[in-house]
Length: 326
Image: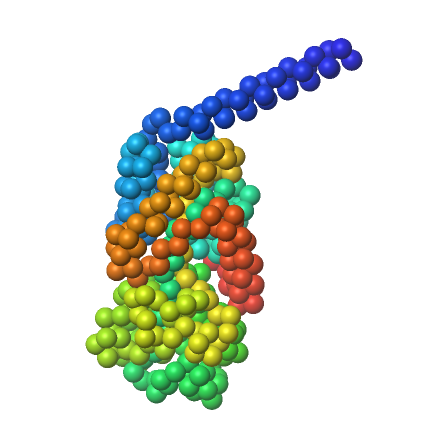
């Protein structure tokens, strides 16, 4: 019994020492460069977002923030790397709707649990989609499109950037919300669907607002609604889906910073504080709004609640649509 008591005392002493060491490390954080993992390859909108925040975060922390693009497998590779990193604040990741809310329900096996293995820091920005229709479709409003599609069950389709992508699931949510029979036509990238949309072979497409607007302004395609909860600053004349007749409909391509689950609260607080300062800077808002994104800058608690709600929504859509990715 004495030996057991001594072992328990030693274990408690070690645990206390480790806790004190982590607290001390959090207070002095950061003392070396921070790795910022991106689950996508360089060059896209996600990369631009990360580099805007990453550069300014480095300036605020007084340490270099190194962008580490780890694209592949729908973001699963990056998530596994970030999950297994030391929870010391020197590895942060730019999570997205796909990695944190869609993948766990889309794939049969995912090596991480977004709500168990990561600690949310801040929801940085969200980019809505625009519901575009082909010139071959006479509808000029969402209500007209729904009536037109219901009169032709199974005859209309919608394109996407591939199975399980945000624009695919936005289309599936539209089908469910409006009770429509539409076929899904996947492409290897949503932009590749545009020529067929213009030609009338694809009838509708949920596309990120920035690449959609030039076609809308030129009169080549009609925009019926944006998918965000409020009108996009980039397209204030386009109504939301709720305004257009589908209450509660909201989707976006969103991104936020997460860290390994056991990262110290002090480190999370520091990173969140600096990201919040950056999100409030007018030049950051202007630059990202020019890319079609709305800067948000939430608290860790708000981001955690958002991740939970998005998982609940997309798991139901994926289940109802019978979608499964290999």
